[in-house]
Image (cartoon, rainbow, N blue to C red):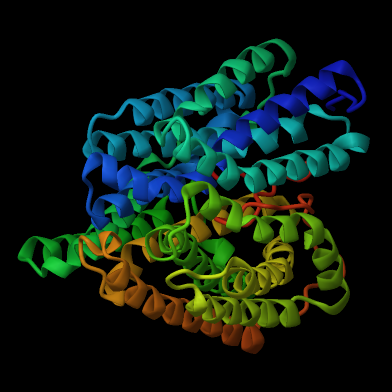
Length: 492
């Protein structure tokens, strides 16, 4: 049984290590969007290249995050976590030094691999190291400090873009890693759970899943060309997706066991997740561009403008979770997406010379309240839909689904809204397309609300409860790890 106490020096070092590691990935997920316009100008990149700058990272992260957790269980959580931190830092250095957009995109894909190794490992280290009496408080502190990191991310990113330059958005990860790695190797005990992963790793399943996402993403981004290679790529992406499902059904140790979807409520809540996080992914990709390209905000002002959403989530997510436990998930998962849809429709007012107080802030406050309302009950419903021993796996699948939804949205939304390759260089053209995109995002959220209202039911009284009560990341729901005395929740 783990026996490190939170009040001990070692406990504080472990908490610092995991916060530093997870903050690297959280900062990256919130600051890059703010830097996109300046990257495009400096590297002479079109809109498709900016889409790939975001999606290359999300692609490898979403495709490999379940496998990353399994590797930690087999080979040691501290070891894989440290490898992930080093990998992420080296890839960040490559991003910061990239001489052209092609190398930047490749380095971003490598960053996602590092993120897939360190993201599940940071929480797993806490659960494996701390005494059971201190574990809940340690997880709370970890998620709270991580949320603060997510909150300051856009502000820091905007400051760096307007000051030393966008490359420092990536280079900032290097000193964080230089602090994190020696602390981890010196103060964090090694742990693992090889019994949960005695079979072979599902590398083929992970590769097919990532390949399917990559091919479909490419087809959506390049679809405006309407060429034969795009059609062939789309067909190949669908075929890879079918092959992924076939492999997962036949393998004895699949990364994503099909039987977990035997729970109707688990399947439905993941469909709701796809709807809401597709809308969020599209919104946060476009709003940073809209504020700078159309409204004339600096990168710092655009990053700071988004702070109210994360602050609301930090302050109110635990209360929203408690409310969801009392009244059940159906109402929060219906009302939350509808509030978010209203916020995105209010964002239609964000145009040339938009007033922050009267045009931008109302949209962000309504959207933030909607996210507060739905995120914690969504996580609780995912956990309540499966047996306790599958809680971590269910959370990992839900987290990967959210990231995949954001990936597809960033690829598809500019196409649906009619954005050309040079759209972000023209304020008038981008503004028109942004309005269309916000309507599409709102409609997607309404569809998610309708699905939740008609299908979600109250979980059983003895359901699992989330350990991460405070959450500030807007790109995916919080990861939940394995429960004490059970197998790994990272997937196999």
